[in-house]
Structures are given as C-alpha cells and as structure tokens.
Image (cartoon, rainbow, N blue to C red; front, side, top):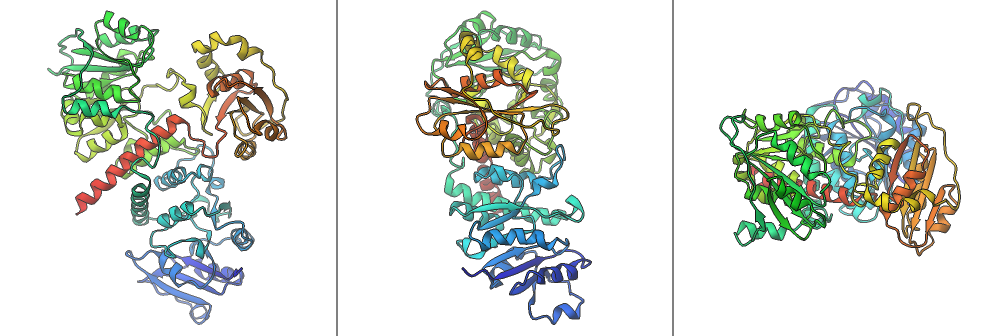
Length: 624
C-alpha cells in the first residue's frame, strides 16, 4: 500500500504560528506540505518559500481550501492541520497510523474531549452533531470533517474532489468507509476550534445546506425515516372536501379576554379517560369559544367523557398518527386564536393564558419556551439538536429549541391559513412555513411538560440520552396500568447472573444504571455494552425478551446483570423490569442497535428533515 503523506495546512488570519506549524509538519516526513492561504496574504519567510517540499496555494471565498489542496496533493494520506494551532507531533501520528495500517479511511478529531459537561454548544457544533445523526454515526457526536486536524485516505473519496467537505463526508459514509476518532490537545482550548469568524461560519452553513440537499434528494425528503404511520390521506381528503367527519358539537363562550377574538382549544386524545375531563375543566377557565377534542384509536371512554364536558368531539376508530389530530382540529375550528394542548395532563390556566393573549399582541405562532429546562449544552439530546439546528437555518437562532413540536403552543388564524391546516401534521414544517411567510414566531412562556408527560416505552425509550432520575422513571412506571396487571412479573423475576460496574465520580455524587432491553441483537449488543462502560455505570442491566439467536451467549461474557425471558414480553415491559431492579440514582435506557434511534426519535428527526428539505427548495426558488 502507498502510504505517502501530504500535510495540508489551511490558515486564515495571522502568521504567528505558521512557521512553527510547518516545521512541525515536516517532522512527519511528508512528500509535501501544502499551505492554503488567503490570496491577499503573502508569507514573509525566505526559509519557507525556498523549501521545495512546501507548496503555497491561494484560496478565495469562491474556492474551497479543502478542494484546492485535495486536487493538488500527491500523497495517498492527507493530514489536514490548522495553520493557527500548533499540535503535538506524536498526537498527529495517531491520525495517520490507522489509515496507514488499513484500519481506517477517515480519522476525525474527537471534539467531545474538549467539552465539559454543561458547556454551551455553538451553532456549527450542533449541526455537526446533526450530520452524524443523519448518517448513522451518533457515537461521533460533534466530531466532524470541518474541524482540524483530520486525516483522510485520498482514494476513499469517490469523486476525488472536496469542493464541499460535507458532501465528501456523506459520500464516504454511503460507500461504507471506515471512520474513527483520535485526539489532539489544543493549545488554547476551544478557542482553537474552527471557525474563527462569522464569515467562515456562513461558508460552513452553506456547505451543510448544499450537502443536506444532495443527501435528501437521494434518500427522500424524510431521509428514509418513518413518519410513524401518519394518516395523511385523511388530511388530503379534507383538503378537497371529500372527508366525512364523525363530529358532535359542544358549547363555548364569546370571551372579552382576547380583544374581540375567539379562542379555539384543540386537544388530540387516545385512551385518556383518566385525564381528559380534568384537562377540559381546566381549559374552560380560559373562556374558549370552543374546545375541540379529536379522539382517535381509543378503546376506552375518552370520547364519551369529552362529550359530557361539552367539548366538540371528532371520533376516528383508527389511529391517526402523531399530530394528524391537531390538523383535523384546526380544520374544523372557527376561532381566531388556536391553542393546542395535550390530553394526558392538565396545564394550569395561568400558564396557558400567555399563549392566547400573545396572539392578541402581534405574535402569530406562540411556542413553549423550554430553553431553560433543556439548555443548548453538551451533551445535547438528538431531538433538541434538530430543533435548534432548524431554527439556526431559518435565521431564528434566538428561538433556541423552541418548536411547534412541544405543547402548549398557539397559532393565529391568518398564520394557519397561510401554512395550511395539513402542514400541522409535521410541526417543524409548519414552523418553517410560518417563518418563510414573515409571521412572528416567539417563545412566550415556559411550561414544564417534561415531567408530567406520559412515558410511552415503545416510543420514547431506547436512546443513549433518554432516561432520568430513578424516582422519576419509577413514578412513570407505577402510574402505567401495564405495571399493575404485571406487577408480580416485574418485581419477582430474578437475574440469571449479576454483573459489575463502577462507583463513578462523574455524576456529582450520584450513580448511574444503564438498562438495555434487547431481542435478537447478537450483531450489535457487544459494541453497545462496551460503549456504555465508558460512561462509568454502577451497573449495566440487560433484559432479553424472546431472543432466538446467540444474544444471551454474547451478553453472558460481558459482565452485566442479565434477565432472560424465553417468551417475548415486549421491549417496553423489559425496560420496566430493568428499571425496577436497578439500584442507582439515575437510569439511562440504551438501545441495543448501533444507531440507537427510538421510533419517536425517528419520526421527529424525519419531520425535521422534511422541514429542511422544504426550506432548501424554498431557498433555491427564492434565490432564482
């Protein structure tokens, strides 16, 4: 194998370290050192300009510094290092060796080691995390091809071009390239992580958008992710006035609270007989013109109770899928202000009122401000990263993770008519359309919907970042009717082996339990368990349900606490058993698959990709 090395050194501003960086690079014995410099800058060093190994290449705003060097390089291995940052030579060798030995095609800088837990993430870092999520490399976090140093095998890039490094990154992943991470100690911490300027960040954002556009053209507007079975056909029928609604009208009030405007409250519901009455009663205090409950897929008395409380009730026997009920409620509503809430827990009137009144004072789309509860900091949940990333693309960074995905939220009638009631089935798309239409979108009030929100195991558990305090998780479990009916099984089943763990200092005096519910995961579970060890859990509990492959044999060798059910009890119940048997203060549910996305995460990320796809197309149309 040809292991010839080219070192590429882009630099942007200042030459304070450039000479030392080049001299350090020469110690790696490359066949050449390519210095990519701004075309208006000259290097004032006779020693450098007369060295035949050193090649200077000019770059302007039009040309990618990556591509200028990539096309010129003669080496089979290219090491990109920052001309404004002096790295340790031995650390740089750890980027080259995996490629030289055939173990990797691309070695990225492990930026996660630069970040302290709770540190604020820049917009670019958030989008680098999103890109890794999209291509199935969640474990790479914010590590990316936009951060130096990184090393790449030249022939691994199918196009042999690097006009847009993010496009090249997508190409590499699609072709099955082997990607790994290494680490260099920066001389000045995060100050030496690119980009330095707003201008650079703007260039990077354009690269990201262009790469996403190409990726989504190949994979489809949702990036090949499921929408969770949304009945969009019903909405299409309503658009052309073909749909028939099974609707029972209720009663309401013409209030003086909203400057002559009418308030419609819309509540989608499924099997919420225990809470729907209280939710409607609390909502009445807002003096709505109408309360619309869209009941779908229910097998209990939700619809009957809602009717008894005077709500307008629309019934569908089948499940409609997430957010379709909100679209139908908006379709039949008559109010000027549409307030959307959930049916599984009541929200106090004083918390809901600002959403409605803000629409009387210039706001068109009022969002729940969850930024104080879920700050944009490391490590950032994948769904939060996409919410923030979408707002960044729309030049609404100030919204943070503000999203139409979270209740409560409110929409003006004029805004609804612009975006179309059917777009509410994809909340992120509706939000983008409102912003594009020039409507005012604002986070108006913080309502903690995280703690009271119902846990739905098959939808919400399974990622590396989902879980919570043991007390919180157990409260959710004990409130689930499935727990009551299977209490003996949950509490009395014993593990076939007990494992080992760490007494960690990472969690501010608390300890962590990792729980993995799995079925037929022999190909991936060992890697998942080994990754989980890195976060120093007190215990790793694996609950196998109905496995017919060698998962049990694989897991037994890995020092975990192991429960085995020969019959398939379902992953939700398996997680419950793991949680109930856990001993630590914090519970982290981990998916046994490598990608680790739960059904809910796939649906939500798919919604955001659909919104991004629309945004890119709208941007092209506007620019043309």
